[in-house]
Image (cartoon, rainbow, N blue to C red; front, side, top):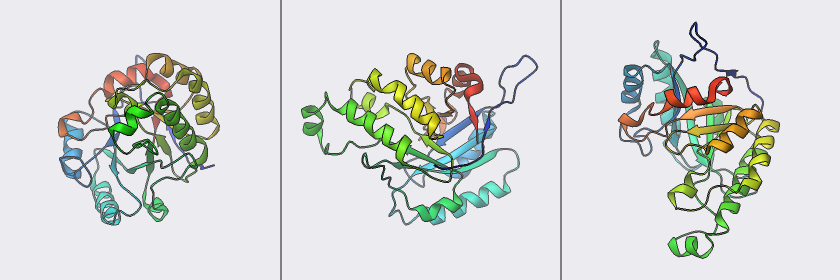
Length: 245
């Protein structure tokens, strides 16, 4: 199991309201965002964020990643107003727990986001229609594999649970998996993301909160105006279960 240090977000004003605003899921022009890291930093400061994670999409054969991490480190070391977290988002490949990550990058990363971006055996619309009733179950098994079998020495966030299903107009993760997902996340020290572009269902979120699961917030921004979108409202909902990397 990966071991690492983090804190529950605890910056509050005199009325006990969380005042520190974070966005732990931001993409830039290094992958599929339409702005630079520098522009993301300036935007984050303009809207009053306290910390951001730059988490560009990568595959294990992405040759640009070392330069990306070096550039991100340089910006992080110079920045004094905003906390910058060096991250990457990768996909889980199958239920064996294999992820599309070059582990040589880990020493230069602060956080890893693991998401389901593809269902094994679904290569086109016809495949999706053919097994659409089974896909939410397959998706849930991939989420559980990411939680139970992916063990990294860095904080690991399970990115946007259910987003693939919503985007493809499929049913959400079946309820019979919710309890296991929560219990395994706690057991395996995984963080579940509340993605403001695809929020968790209220009942699922309440289950995670009731079981003291660590929760992160991310906008999944790909456009400049999406950075920080919805995070203030999400922080109010999540309260003291919100993690601080």
